[in-house]
Length: 85
Image: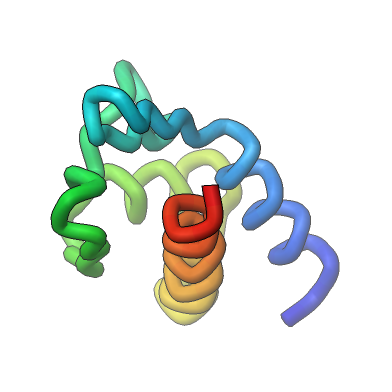
């Protein structure tokens, strides 16, 4: 993908808060952060109705194809952060 998409992925990762003590991950959605998953499950699922998609569409104007790519990369990076903390 292009540099704009890579910039978006970096923004999303930077703005994501991982609380290892509470085993929570909060995505920078609006109007408030949404719990994505518990660290004990270590699963991220793609749901076309979730706030991640709406956030990417509204904030960045991404297409569904771009959002799927961003989600895949975002998920990979977050899982890596959890595994290698």
